[in-house]
Amino acid sequence: MHPFAISPANDAAKAIAAHALDPELAFIAGGTDLIGLMKDRAVLPERLLDINGLPNMARIEALPGGGVRIGALARMSDVAADTEVRRRFPVVAEALLFSASGQLRNMASIGGNIMQRTRCAYFRDETDGRCNKRRPGSGCAALHGLNRNHAIFGWSESCVATNPSDLAVALAAMDALVIVRGKAGERQIPLTDFHRLPGGAPERDNVLDRGDLIVAIEVPASVEARASHYLKVRDRASYEFALVSAAAAVATDGGRISAARLAMGGVAHKPWRLTAAETGLRGISLADVDGLRSAIATSFVDARPLAHNAFKVELAQRVALRALQTAGARL
Amino acid sequence: MSETPKFGGAADDKTRSGSSSAKSRVEVVSVNLTVNGQPRTMTIEPRTTLLDALRENLALTGTKKACDRGECGACTVHIDGRRVLSCMTLAAMQEGNRIATIEGLEQNGVLHPLQSAFIEHDGFQCGFCTSGQIMSGVAIIVEAKAGWPSAASADVRTPFTLADLSRAEIRERMSGNLCRCACYPNIVDAVAEVVARS
Image (cartoon, rainbow over all chains, first blue to last red; front, side, top):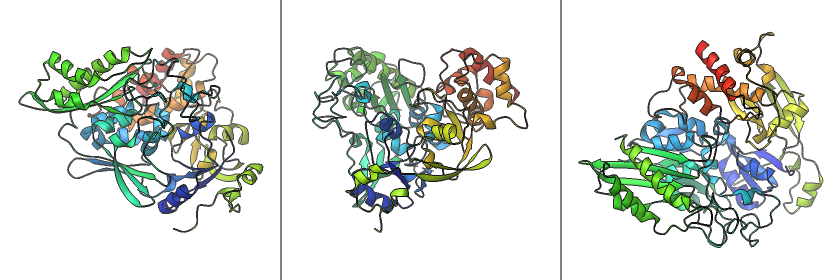
């Protein structure tokens, strides 16, 4: 790795001020994404501020009314093992357990998980000059390259990569809030607005500014949350990014769907919520497979597959259907 | 807001524009930690991984460097009792931490039961992944005893106990440790035997 300086932070306000002032400074928590990016020379910060010692940021709190508040420094494995998270939001626990490996889950923080760079193999490749994320304006090698793993929704000519976070997909389905402290105090960002589509600025993965520190993620209670499920389809049985994944949650009334939530991973630069399908699913019986399939299909009319990933359009609909059915079986 | 954070050996470098001078000197930090029960002090560059510090500064070469990218698990060690990848961890962030490596597993000259089980079940050929496999295997039994579910668990909503640690569970939980000799069935046998005796 390149030479850098490191210092422990013990005060959040000072850490935020330092990050706001110093463009060459990066926060480090678990480090599992940042250290990999530094080894790939994709990011080269001159100074690291170790935020692991910041107080009261690793707690997992069951909130009155059925939600949970997860401190940004809580580790993936601790959140996945938490009894209340598993009971109230099985989709969140499952998304975490299908992520990375046991060793990485012990290290990686929740805040860092949603900060993972949206990336593809061309982004990681040090030798290929064409990546608008690495070098803005250099072009996109994946757009007309090998793009089997890439996006089918929301991509631009500048970037066709997908976001790697499984957790973010589950949190998008649950309408989670990212609690951020910045120069002007604390604010809440809906998870679905946290990550960006590439547009003309694919080097920006999310809406955070300099001096912003994620302090927690809040998952609000919902009637659908307990009947929820995360389904991940990948090329290997374990320890692999999603080809396609789905977070589903459902509630019924008199045997018919009263509310459904569907979000997908592996299909876009950010977690992709199937809002048209969610609306169309209302009133349909969970036993009416053709009806479920038709409702889900309404969210795929605007899919734009690339040369090598047309299979994802069909696969994603099947994954969404099976995730919804498995969630429904938990009612 | 008061002063900005101090950065180790660069703390006296107040000029933010002086990046070239910062680059021209070698930053070093001193770290106190416990390795296999022994207090140790290391003077290292901030960019040194825990893996490199263990091997190069402390001469503990049982922990292996293979991919150096968090992909293979060969460098698995325990920090404060939890299995982690030492190649994806900075040594400078380990102040006060308790590290355990494969060298610390035996007690009074007696191998850990999982080390013996790896020999008994022929759980390795070339041996390069073995210390990582064993450090991971020891940890998954602790994790299962603590009630942690996995992606192989039937239902995350229900309690998990050591009795649920099936071969499928072991395979899933060990998936972060690759073996290019493909000793996987024998590795699972070794872990399963220790689970059965636990």
